[in-house]
Length: 445
Ligand code: 2IT
Image 1: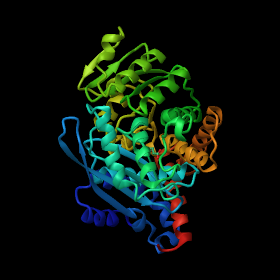
Image 2: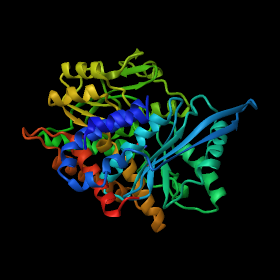
Image 3: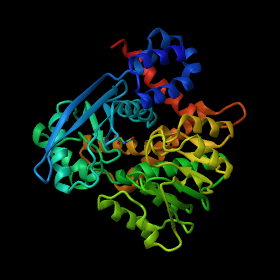
């Protein structure tokens, strides 16, 4: 494989799909050397085949709002690769959603899912629908309209969607209700379900919990410990709250959270009461963080700014793609950050990652760090297939084991001659080679 030639071809075929092209380039650059040491991969054109999704569905989602007005949104499902298991990956409802973003997310999902040790392929979907400011009934009608199209393409052994930004337990409930009615079956066709209809314990907090388990191993491998560390977190959505809760429980101090309006700096650190307050604020369909500063004295709200200017030991981007750029990375490095763990998908811009690696700051990529979410979705699928329900301890123990196994894979494939662990390289090579081998063994299809 020649990465530059392959990228030039992809840019010609998919002009302007910047997030997708960014995600593909990162993976190909890091696996190129290993790839070229395995002639069977080139002989089977694995790179050319893996960068294109198997298929993409796009559809119109008309629905009626509370004022009786007709609204029209776009819906998508990108089925990227099912070489190692059924398509699996979340649905994102956000006004920024477009094909480039869903293709980048679906592409990353292939390798993340491969790392979890569970049999899951990669997919992603969603809509440009904005749940913010919508009434509960509007969200329900939208989810029902979305599922009347999506249900034909998915199934418990075919393609299993879940949540992502803008899709949590409430949306999964409404989506599942419509699927069940249309398909006339109760199956594990979605994950992140409620506990009354086949959900798994730990799934709501699994992405954040898994990320903190992974970060703890990053620190221990570096001869360090999590206890007493100061952490900057961005966002306060599905992922950030679990990370904040677990990090706090394990003795670290989380001093920032953020929203589209700016960030909060709370030097005393978050605690269970503050996290509960933020969850309530978010449940009111509002993603601002400013009210936190009025409620908790000693904390400050910085409008329109990002939390990466605060002096911390660990930075954990938990909001969205490309939220941490080269300038942010320079500021973090100047303030002595030692670890950066991406909990959002592709949270760091390539120039930020380059800087971390150059300065030997330990950097964990989203595919490894945030894989606990989809891994626990995989555990939900296992429980649904067996028609049983595991205890919280059982699911949490399996999540621990999976995060350890991902960490081990990163060490195996990412340790550089000077001892620095390039987690990005390790995760990309381990995930890619598993899927590639599976594709070689199954022939050209
Ligand atoms: O990015 C992700 O891994 C997710 N949004 C979770 C996907 C899933 O199927 O649980």
